Image: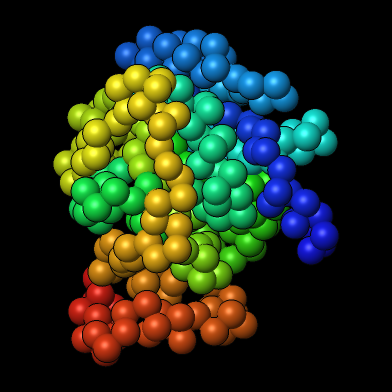
Length: 286
């Protein structure tokens, strides 16, 4: 996409393709995805679209997620500007669709996460900010990319990451690696979704910290639409959420891509003064 078209998209009201990753092989999730689909469909605006990608045969989380992104990208011909990816156990707040539209209008050309499970999210919320940023830490419960970045992400991922045995890396891990490699901060919006099945992870995260939102999800449509998305835009709190994240640029990206992109420099930059110790510590762990 050329600069003129990017500028045009940045000033348009977002038109969104919502796409749900559904583990249809797990019958316990059928009620959750039905409620989620009904909630979203009732709130869709003019031009918005909705798709459920159903995995009936355990084909793997990345297979499902990449199909979701590809479906969203294909909707660009119908005027879609952003792809919003949700897990089937996401529980959006009332007024979710319009709140997401307003948030993306404030940050139209960035990766955005709508699930708040990190301590920095709570600090930002307590000081009245609607945003904070990080180098990593995007969680796949609900996130969004403008179509151009979604296209760039898939194209880069396809040729740059080391192949791992099935099922491979989760979708949000791949997105975080892409963001760090391209020095694109993740913008975390005030949480608009809760995690509906925190104790039933399909990718081994049952015992993972942050399985519930740390900030209160808006209880009413009025509360969601009253969020001032200008708060925190100018000088957001920033964090490297997980100390080990930069090592993934060395372990999971192909050597020739690391060299071409100068990822050794980016890794040291992410760790800062602690780079030598962090390299030694995390380099021993797989």
